[in-house]
Length: 77
Image (tube, rainbow, N blue to C red; front, side, top):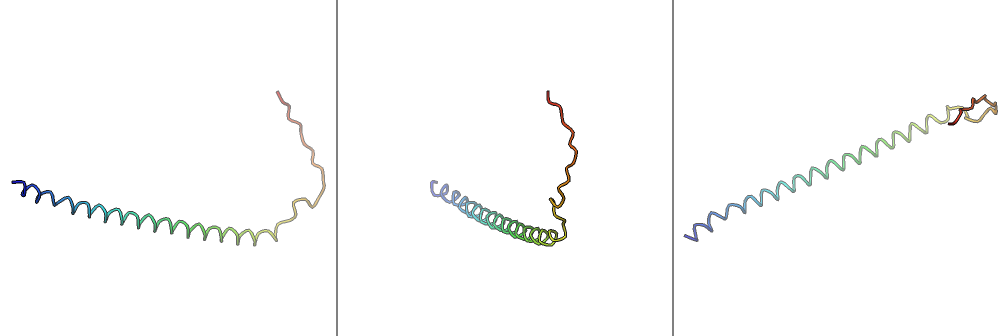
């Protein structure tokens, strides 16, 4: 009788193997998603850097004129 119980307990070994396979798949998918996110971030940074290089020569200087603009005083409590 104890031999029969041991034979039926052999089944969970396959479940552990299945769990390991599932963990491996989840780990691989997570690594792939992180890689894609990093690649997207690099592309975004490059596009932003390129846009900034292109836009700066066309912008006028911020401090070209020294005109004093009237500023209203804000009363404090």
